[in-house]
Amino acid sequence: VGLIMCNWTLQFLDSRHLRRALIRDMYKALAPGGLMVICEKFRLPDPKMELAAQRGYLWWRRNNGYAVEEII
Image (cartoon, rainbow, N blue to C red; front, side, top):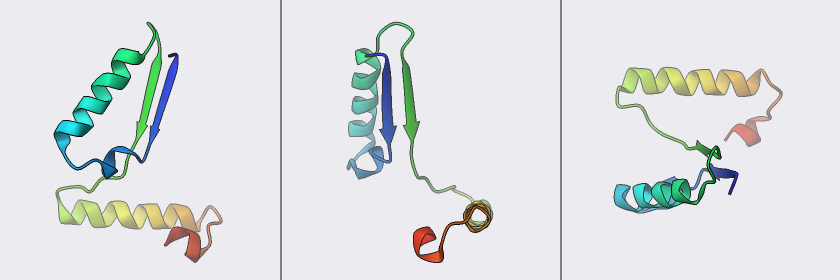
């Protein structure tokens, strides 16, 4: 496999162990020089930083033409 895209998938696995196992298995399936891209949602441990990140995300979405319903 030359490319693996994992978009908003790991969050649905119950444990870190399962997530790590999936990532390991995907990595093993890659051909030499292959690429794995993982996109996930996450929360920052610092509440102030989390709030700043959320505000920045909402600002970006609003300023790039997303409707309120799409952002929610």
